Length: 316
Image 1: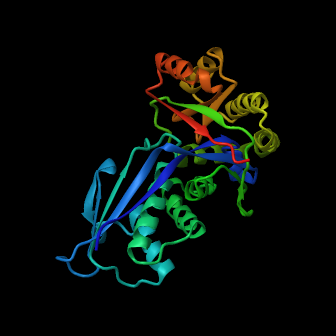
Image 2: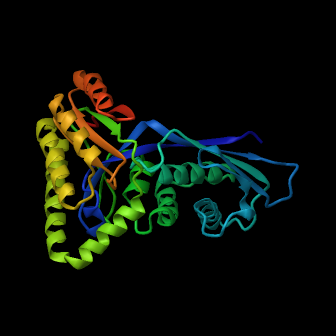
């Protein structure tokens, strides 16, 4: 039997990060320029149930049986088994690789889970649908991040622009115009679980103050949805920058994120903000397509270790 392959894109949050954990909406988009890849192939020389995993990006080369029971790779593989009612896997080799930077706010963990779920379920003859894949990735993401919002697994599984609220039906957004983003990596690791946990502690101490900010972010995200649906890119850019100012009030930005936001705006971006957990990771700038290369160059000169230019295509 030939190897089975599956892929999953990265993601960026356009508006609403952190507030989404507290019941507010958020908007996210896939980033197809980076992706996770998983392949599954039979290993006829091994005993049934033997699963060997090779994942060089996370220095993993081991048997599934030798991993801790709460390891994310164990969680996603067992999740697929449970979803399909497979008690014992055939002997197989799972290979995982990714071009998505780790701990940078681009959804690397969720993308790996999605790719593995798709490849393994297809190998077993019963490919899981997007909703099932998203659910499994969310369960696995809980081991990476503790209390994830669910937005990463959702946008990556469906591969489309999404409007997301916890415990609400998924909404796929229509956007009237193409829009271009420049994503810039600070080079500083952003550990989502730690950042979310530290913010939660601050919220517990000053609940009223923080929930006022979350409400403002929620209203801003609703306005961003309208701007996307009507193709109002100048308005969307302003909302990006307003969102960044509110995230600074949550103390989740950093000096380098703030610097790159300023550099992007000075270079002509329509708006800019951190994307993801913050305290490192990536910022995003909404730009006119013809300015993208220039703005990316300015960001690199200011210290960004990498930039990605991506276009979200119109859907209507």
